[in-house]
Image (cartoon, rainbow, N blue to C red; front, side, top):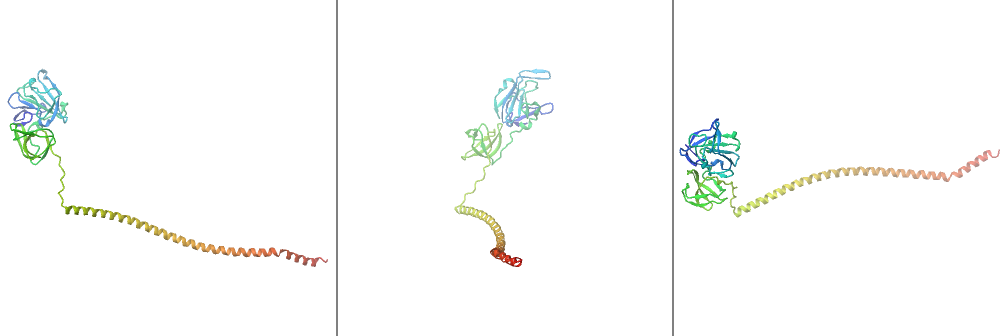
Length: 326
């Protein structure tokens, strides 16, 4: 015998296991017409089809409903052998864990009161039927432990003890946080945890998928003394100065490289200037020599021009004396 949230009981017998020829799990408590609930791992879903009967071995079985449910994760489940009178849902109904679907029965091709339960990894494909046992047998194992911080995602009763017969103290609010103090305890088909709430109060809460682990909050820095604050401030100032000094040193290096480049360029220009000064002195001297020669030539030319007529005249006279008397 084992617990399953299909029955919310821990005395359920597996009368036939899953196999290649039997694509489901047969379950019974030995008591007829036992309530069947949406199992815990289905979490929530909706009824997408209900067959009023089915054929098997060439025979049609009327008033033998097959209930199809699609779970919110895309998986699905089928419930077979209940009586029509015990079907508690209709097509389109939304369901959450713990809602009654039907009851065990002996309708259709059956030889005793039981539930034939199937689990489909794809809600509308019978070829995806797998062994349901891991999904529904012993599915009350605790998923939380002492010390865990949880947050409530829906309104839930807080009781004075671990069971449905204990008094309800109050209800949780959405977003309320608590820390698990004790548990888990199995009672009345539920797993119970004792919790400490933010106002210091305590109470027992059943795990029905209405709370989850709270997000981990980053650790808060310890409070600092004034002296520690001043040390931190000066550390930040020193860090800023160090960064500024590093930036200044980088800038200084760039400037030093620039100065070196300019000094090298100036040395080249000074050499070029000296070379130009030497060329200028040489050219100036040559110019003066040319100018002096020019003056001398012009003077000599002028003298020749000035004495041209008297020279010719004297030559004529000499020639006349020599040859004129003849």
